[in-house]
Picture 1 (cartoon, helix red, strand yellow):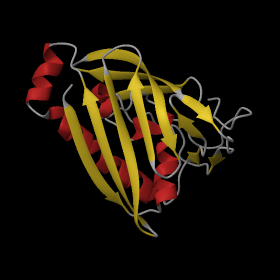
Picture 2 (cartoon, one colour):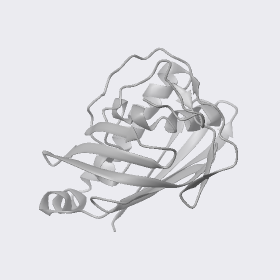
Picture 3 (cartoon, rainbow, N blue to C red):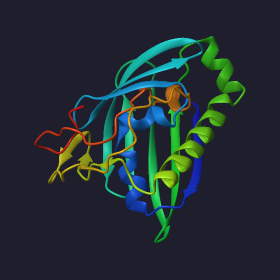
Length: 202
C-alpha cells in the first residue's frame, strides 16, 4: 500500500495535543472530506467520507493507544488503510506530531489521486487545520486516557474530560478520508454523556 508521511509542530503541551486527537468525532472540524466519525466503542470507529465525489463508509479498529505517545489503527471493512500518529514533546508548550498512513486505492479515481500526490497534500492540510484548531482553543475539547493493546482496552479507563464550548460544526473538509484517519462530520463538543469506561456516548 502507498505510504504517506507528514509531521507538524503545534504550540500546545503534548497532553493537550494527544487528548484532542482522542476526540475522533471532532475530526470533521479539521479534516477535509470527512463527513462523520462514530465511535462505536473504545476500539471501533465508523468513518464516512466523500472521496472522488462518492460517499464511502468503513470501520477501523484502534490497535494500540498509549497516552501522550501514539495511536495506531487498521481498517476492518471497506478500503484497506491504516496508520499511526505519534506525539513527541519538544518543550513544555510544544509538540511534534508525526502521522504515517497506508492507503490502498479502490478505484481509478483514487489511483490517479495517489499518482498525483493529492492525498499527501490533503493530509498536510488536515494537520495544518488541526494546528489552527487546537492552538486557537488552547485546550482540548475532551480526553480519553485509557490504554489499548492489540485492539483491546487494558488497565483503568480514566474519565473523559470535557472543556465545553465549540458547538457543532461538521467541518466538511477532506483530508484523511481515503487514508483512514477520518470521515465523520463529527461536530460534537461541549459536555458529553459518558459510559462507565469514560467513553463519550454521543
